[in-house]
View (cartoon, rainbow, N blue to C red):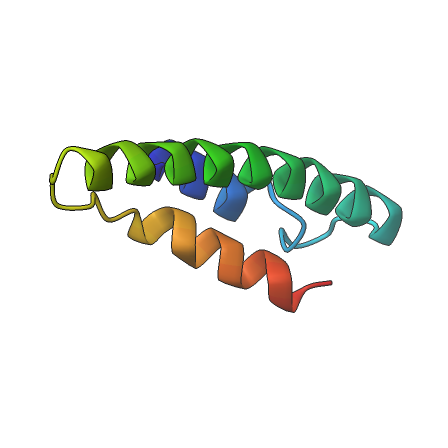
Length: 72
């Protein structure tokens, strides 16, 4: 997750000097990847709940999702 977040910061849609069309493409790419990670997290959460294991926090994924949602 940290690598995903770092790549969002360094290669995402908000990087300076990125043309608008390219920024939109980057945002769509990151949203698609975020959706995949979020689905995996939901599966992991369900398994952890099933076995009574404390849920693993993913603050970097949450942070990236919040930023992505505000840019829509």
